[in-house]
Image (cartoon, rainbow, N blue to C red; front, side, top):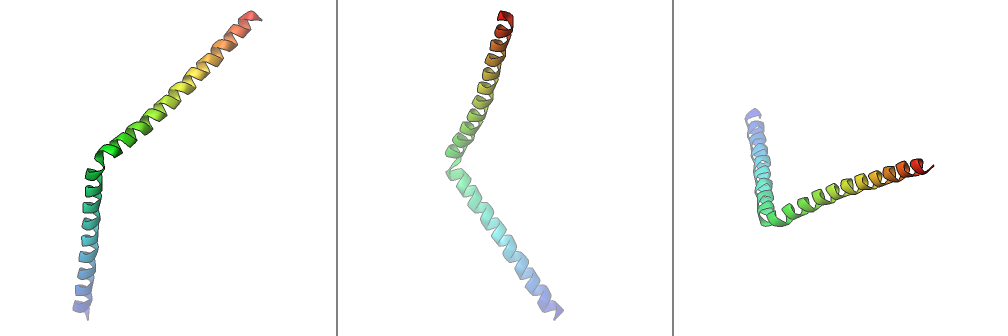
Length: 74
């Protein structure tokens, strides 16, 4: 029985390895097919994040400048 169990275990391992390689090939095909849109999407996300940080910084500087001017006027 141990030989039969070993054979079954080896078959299961081969099946799981085949599934893993199959998924890897599918992922590689997906990435190669949609490479440009994915790069564009990542670029847009980075651009939006940088723009948001820059706008918040600009807004805070404007508020600080207004507060300094108000303090001088008082």
